[in-house]
Amino acid sequence: SRPVDLAEAVELLTAARQVVLLAHINPDADALGSALALGLALHRRGAHVQVSFGAPERPAESLRDLDVAGLVVPAHRVVHVPELLVVLDTGSVDRLGPLADRAAAAGTTLVIDHHVSNSGFGTHYYVDPRAEATAVMVLHLLDAMGASVDLPTARCLYAGLVTDTRNFRAASPDTHAMAARLLVAGVDAEAVTRPLLDTHPFAWLSMLSAVLATATLEVDEARGLGLVHALVRRDLVDGGRQEEVESVIDVLRTTAEAEVAVVLKQVGECRWTVSLRSKGRIDVAAAASALGGGGHRAAAGFTVDGDAPAILDRLRRALADAPLLG
Ligand code: 5GP
Ligand code: MN
Ligand code: MN
Image 1 (cartoon, rainbow, N blue to C red):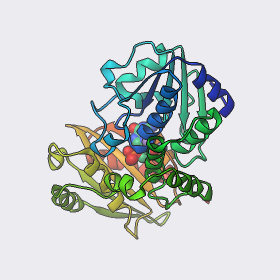
Image 2 (cartoon, protein in one colour; image 1 turned 90 degrees about the horizontal axis):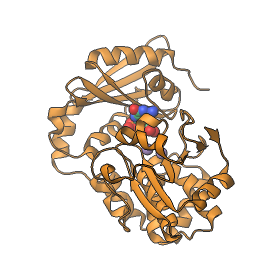
Image 3 (tube, helix red, strand yellow; image 1 turned 60 degrees about the horizontal axis):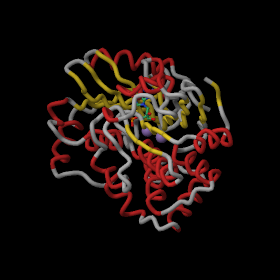
Image 4 (tube, rainbow, N blue to C red; image 1 turned 135 degrees about the vertical axis):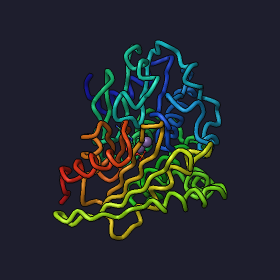
């Protein structure tokens, strides 16, 4: 495995006739939007293209409109030995879930990602932790390939930008300029953003109310850091969409007294996926990495077996060991 720059990544992408692009499991708009934007460009160049992810079977409802060309295939239909495998927005190979085996089978595996915690897997990796979204990196690649950014492509990239920058709150001037370019290409920002960030069924309100009733605020006296956490038990979700589960952290993180917000999401009888958010004083990717996950300094996660109180105990210790940021 070795790092490549933009030019070398473009060479790999343009040489392949048959390409599989994979997003991480439970793909968000950055993962799926980046895979689709790059997939569309390669498809237009004449390559055979599949876009997929290990789970669930179909993209989240809020993301389905992005796939205008029908490039997404279910995981079981992904070719077994791709000529070129491109893995996007994925910090480690286990985040491919059941499709992790394709990374070993492919002739070439190119990882395109912006996670600080990226483990540098694949035969080649193009990783830029300064990029605010994988979509930023993909737009640079498209430009270097001479690919046109048509409206479907622009929508995919805009969806990635708006999600990973929390609606541009965390976006640099360069990323704002990029968004402006996508708007000029015809993106209707409101139409792309509303299903991603602002749409929930009525049932979400009662689910949210039950989840928020579990919210607890604790203060680490030694470091003066507040921690707010809440539990999303499986029975509260009950067949609902993942979008509603993922939205809880955005409510919790608004707690003024808390530097860190944590949501424990039950995914099995005794298995939880944990979302961490920091306001910037503490590196939550370090804490998540110590518990087998990863992410970014301000947004990270991990999945573990155990009961909620025990997981919270381990998390408190990992946070106490996580570096404070200057
Ligand atoms: P979220 O809380 O939205 O699921 O994830 C926040 C960030 O943490 C994302 O950048 C995501 O890639 C990362 N992340 C979440 N769960 C895991 C995990 O289980 N392993 C790793 N390596 N990263 C994770
Ligand atoms: Mn992602
Ligand atoms: Mn991302």
